[in-house]
Structures are given as C-alpha cells and as structure tokens.
Length: 283
Image 1 (cartoon, rainbow, N blue to C red):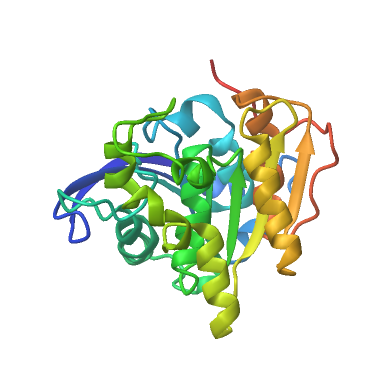
Image 2 (cartoon, rainbow, N blue to C red):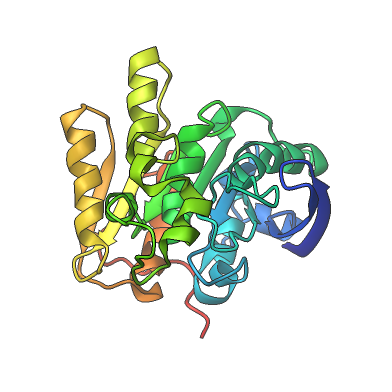
C-alpha cells in the first residue's frame, strides 16, 4: 500500500489544499494467502472520495476505521480531503468553494495524477456525519462524476437550520455561521445546498441519480432527520438502500458499515449483519 499527503493548488478554493491518499498498489495483494489471484486486482482500481465529520480532518477515517484494510482488500484508491466545518458546500467568502473542489476538481485531478479510471462508474463518494451530508450533496450536485454514494449518520440539519433567525444559534453554530455555509437559512430548503432539492431537480430534468446507500444507528441523535430523508426518497420513488441497526453516533457503528458499503459499491453482496469486518478499529 502507498500512503501519502499531497498538497496542490486548486482553482475552486484559490489556494493550496492538502489531502491524504491510500493507493492499493502493492503487488503482493494481487494474490490471496492461499495462492489464488485476488479477483479485485483483475479489474480497474476504483476511486473513492471519503469525507470527514464536523470538527475533524482527513485523518479521522484513517485513525478510527478500517478504511485502509478495505482499500487494500478490494483494490480501491481512497482520497481524503478535509471539510473544514464547511459541510462541503460552496461557502460564501474566502473562495471556499468546497463543493466544486471535492465534487469536481479533486476527482479529476486524482484520476489524472494517479492514472486512475476517468469513468463515472468507477467513482464513488462516502462520508460520515457532516461528511455524510457532504457525500450526499457532492454526489447529487455532480452526478456526472459519481455513480454511487454512501452516507452514514448524515448531518441532515437543514430543516433545523431553516428555522433560525439572526442572533439565534444551535449546538452546531449560529445564524451567521450557517449563512456562510449554506446561504440565508430562510431559503436553504429550496437551494441547491439541500440534497432533497437536488433530487427534485434531477427528477424534473431526467438526470440519472447516483445509487444511494444510507445507514444510521437507532440511538443516533441524527436518526430523525435521516428517517425524514428516507421518507422523502420513498415518496419520490428514488431507489436506495437504508440500514438501521443498534448504535450511536460513533465509530463502533461506522466501522462495519465501511466494508459493507464498499462491497455494495463494487457490486459485491453485502456482509451479513454482525459479520466481522476486515481489519479493526485503531484507537
């Protein structure tokens, strides 16, 4: 495996950005321990953009999940930008166009830089919490670049944000913060920062919606807004997979779903509920 941290100037943010990467390029992993070929190395390497949660950076997945083992086993190149608490939207001010950076410029840059497939069908995006929102927004805002989206415990907070008035705040931030990240809260539900609105737009113009994989713990404080999204998808007949199982807003819940979602992305059957995931959680 090759691991690294790369810095490069991106026009979307008008500054040098850094991201981390995991490349499954070790020839030893082309063979299984029993001497048989690993079939995942007989096809093109897949590209997966992985998004961190609120208050975290791009080390989150590397430190707390089994993403490295999953990348190695299934021949998936993983790229991890940092979200900087911007929810991966095109924020107002300071050229913080994180949506354009993650959803368009970065994915094209890494495929060319590392010689990966430029085919949309080989590109996926996945995230947890704020990164779950970001995965949904990224994949739905740039469906020409991503074929599948996996979102865990997504911070689908826009219905709450929309109720805020100047001077008010909630646990995540105040009116001014959300105005910068999403635009005016009073109009956010009909804006293109809202994944639901993006889906409505695609349904109206016939754009192919990326495949959706959602998961949330039954004890997660974000369960209710995740169920709202599931109801929305059902109402509009949007195909999706939704898993709800015991767990809270933590890595014990997210770790097994990492491998399950990647298997789904590459067209393999999901692991059975309760099956031990590859690798383990690093504390």
